[in-house]
Picture 1 (tube, helix red, strand yellow):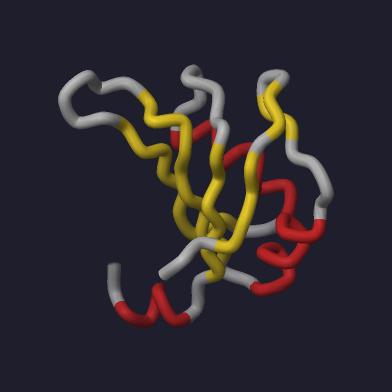
Picture 2: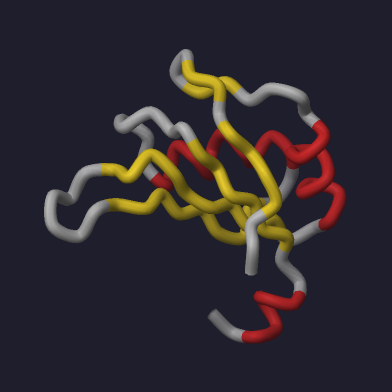
Length: 87
C-alpha cells in the first residue's frame, strides 16, 4: 500500500464476522457509510477458512466516523465487533 493511501485512510478492525462473509460483502455493507478504500477479510493460510475478522479502510473521515458512531452493526444475524484498528 502506498504511503499516500495509508496517510489518507481511516481503518477499522471488524471482528465476529460470519464465516460466510467475503471481502466483497464486507465492503458492500460498510459502503453505506461512504467510500471504502479497502476491505479485507482475514483467512487462515493453511485451511483457507475465515478467521472471523477483517479490516475496512475508508477514504474519508466522515465515513469512518459514521461507521464508528453507529452503536450496533449486524451482518447475517451476527453483531460485529467494530473498533479503530491499531496501525
